[in-house]
Length: 168
Image 1 (spheres, helix red, strand yellow):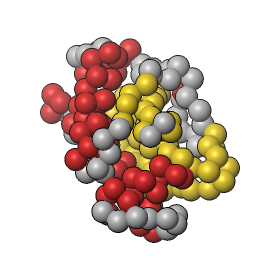
Image 2: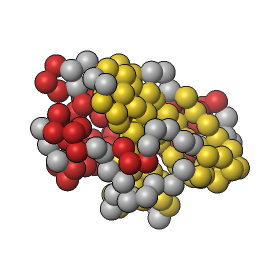
Image 3: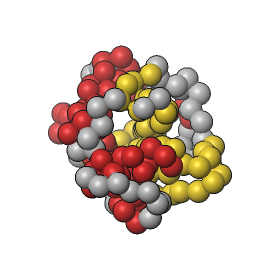
């Protein structure tokens, strides 16, 4: 799915331009802060999944002119790799370090999105990150019709960053 046309109009952009900016920001975050060089973007998902298996999901809410939720959904193996990259040491167990690292990555990505959403002086506030992990779970937030789902691959493994946005 994609974001509502009114959101793109309010931002003075279109989906392609906004997605390109997000890809650039996300690649920068993963390169500089996570130490990941083999990140590649995949086409935007038309129908994002809400069911996850053996994954870690970190979420950051935002409120202001735009309200919504940014979610980072990664397989547990990538969660360990991302945490290892951030900490500069091998992490082999899902623990508080993984939760903290994924929460921080989601927070950095949400900060990037906030930058694009808060142009023109519109205030957007971010929440504290929340992290969910498990063998099987489902995440439902807002309407899939108002979701922008960005897909990536790292070391051949897929992961997704989804952005649910509603206007006040």
